[in-house]
Length: 374
Image 1: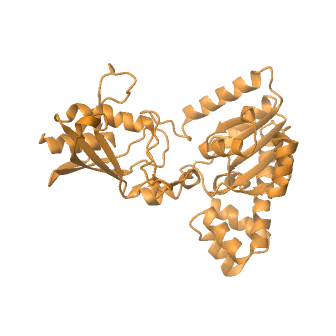
Image 2 (image 1 turned 90 degrees about the vertical axis):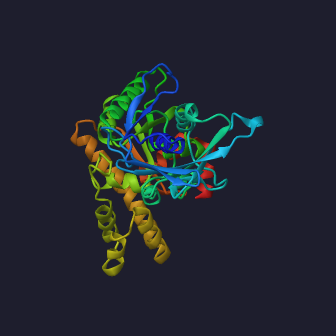
Image 3 (image 1 turned 45 degrees about the horizontal axis):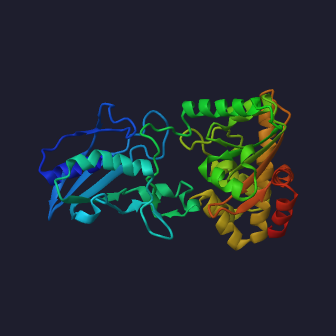
């Protein structure tokens, strides 16, 4: 995005087109040499506007945004002399996430700082800049994320925290997670209890539901190796806490959950639904649902009791298959429970072991509150 923005500003200035834009990628290290970032195209639109197009290349790791087309439309803006520090105005175009309540563009401090550092030197005196960011495929891609659970709607958020991508499927992310786990296991106060939260969404939600932050460890898509290392390292009670559309893969024996490497969610969902008695056109409709969430929601509208039984079966299957996975890898021992939530941040399924661990980890007072609200 920053490269496209810089190219668009160049067109406003009348600069000749260049297919690579020099970017300072680390605002905290101003002496670091600029790096050349490619763009696809840039052109003036007339009326003081210009457009540039880039394509997202997140590096070697697997990432949802690989190949994402990014458009940035730039226009000069009158700069108020009394507010010279507010020279950059950002607008969310199609496919870019906004906060549901305020409708403001969802952008991280790092992403804004990256834009400011690379664009401000290009501005003529007395000029401000207005940028409109567009992700033509952003709305569709956002449906495969948990953005809505954080109140981000209509597209992908600009939430980068560093120039180098650390994808949850990247082996480096596994190394970092295992290192964090080893540090936790070596702590003299380690009690044998652990909550593996799947992604940022789970990490944000778990404390709100009363799970102690000291027990939480964020885990990406490399669930298998992390589970084995946890069991081998002495974890006695392990709670899996995550989004139902992600954790359902474990019910099918899939322990690396990135969609580029393994999927099968529709097949797992319909197999378990068939075991609950669903058949015919209803089963076919469930299989054809766009997402696990959509399928379960539609089933709940048609047959709430069946949907509830199916969710419980999913949680039970996750616990059973995880136990079998650990035993197969010589790491049997911990009690493994599962707690699943939906995009609306509601707990939708708690396995038999998961219910026991959830009550135990949250404490008696919060446990009573959970039973009352459930």
